[in-house]
Length: 357
Ligand code: SAM
Ligand code: SF4
Image (cartoon, rainbow, N blue to C red; front, side, top):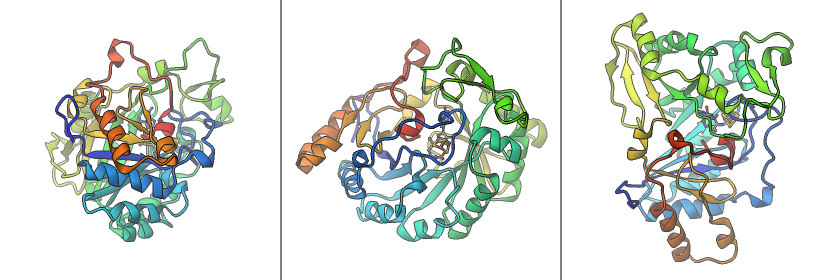
C-alpha cells in the first residue's frame, strides 16, 4: 500500500526481542536498558498475524531483528510461520552472529533467505572494546556457518566511527576481494538524544583496565557514547570511498538485487561488494519503503520519529483482522515525509535495540 507521499510500503522490520547479548557502545549502555517483561512481548503467533495482515496489504519483504534476534528461542519456528503467507517473498535477519553457528542451517531450512551480520572491526581487541561482550571468533564462525547454509548474499554491517575503525576501511574492502561478502558501511546515528556532555565521562580504556586501543569516553551514567560524540565520529562516505579507492583504484558501481538503500560498488574482479548507507541524509527518506514492529507490539512508521501505535492491546482484546488492518493503514498513512534531525528533531523514546534496527 502507498503512504500519503506516494511511497510503496512493502517492507516490514520485525523486532523479536529488546534483549541483547552484546553491549555495543553506540547502541546500549553497559548494563543494558530495562527490558520489557516477557508478557509484553508478542508471541510468535501474534507476530505472524501482524506480518500476514501486512502481507495482505502489500508487504513482500520482512527482516527479523532486535535486540539480538537469535536470543529468542525457536526463531526458525517464527520464520516458517511468516513463510506460510504466499505474498512474502523475502525473509532476512540482522544479527550479531554470536549464536549463528548453531542456528544457520535451521533458519535456512525454515525459509530464511539471507542474513546481515554486524561486525565493526576485524581486530580482536577493538572488538572487545566496541561490543563489550562475545568474541570475534564466534562471529567469524557464524559467518562461515551462514555461508555453508547458503544464507546468501551475506552482508556485513559495519558502523563507521572516526578514530575507532576508520583505519580498517581498506581491510574490510580487501575481504571482498577473496570472498562473496558484501560490506555495508553504515553511518553512525545519534538515535538516543538523551545524553549530553554535561554528564561525567570515563575513558573506556580506563574501564577496560588500560587495554583499550583508543580513547573513548563513555558516559558514567548511561555507559554509552553521547550523541555529540557520535556526531563527531561521523565519517563522510565520500571520504571513506576515497580511502578505499586510493588503495584499490576506482570503485565500479554495482547493483545487487537486495541492495536496499545502499550505494554499492565493487573493486574490479572482487567476489563481494562495498556499500555505503546513510540514514541521516534525508534523501533516503524519499525512497523509504518500511515500517517497523517492535518486540512489544508497537507499529512504528519511522525509525527517527518517536510516533508509534499499539497493536498488542487491540490484538489481546479481541480486535478482528479488519480492525487491525485499519490500524496498520493509519500508521502507513501517518508515516512522516522525512525525518527532521537537521531541524533539531530529537529521538527521545527508545534506543535502537528497543526499536529494532
Ligand atoms: N543485534 C543485531 C545486530 O547487531 O545485528 C540486530 C539489531 S541492531 C540494533 C541492528 C543494526 O543497528 C546493527 O547493524 C547495528 O550496528 C546498528 N546500529 C545500532 N545502533 C546504531 C547507531 N547508533 N548508529 C548506526 N547503526 C546502529
Ligand atoms: Fe546488541 Fe545489535 Fe545493539 Fe550491538 S547493535 S548492542 S548487537 S542490538
